[in-house]
Image: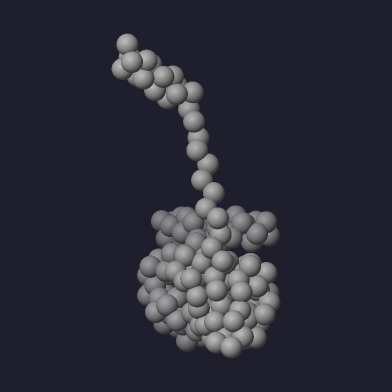
Length: 198
């Protein structure tokens, strides 16, 4: 079985393409009638879905994995544990599942990239949902201890800490909207205004 498109995507760190590549390869080998289950990179496939935030597809993939593989490959079960926590929105559990397994060489870079991306997603969630938040909740969402949440990462983003209440004040990022002005639209608007005036 030729996994070269997948290995190329992993080597170039094109993690957003991995789920689609795996899906295409799986359809191709299934259409050819090749028995692929024993050597399929289920861990990479699951992590690829997590990277593009496609938890539903990950669930369907998990259901299609033969039970013999689930029983014999601990890393597949560990990858699914991340998916379970994503599904139930157990934010701290996602980080615990990531840190709680010794990932293989092939999966380490993808797991690290997903963890970083997931932290960014959680940070954006906090930015959009909160004006003040406790350091304990911030630590839970960002997968760090309370001191790191209070004193390092979020303060670099301009958040302020009230040491007495252990509450962080969220600094909203200015919303930058770029208006794209099409010259033809401007011309039509000018003609319309000119028509109204005369």
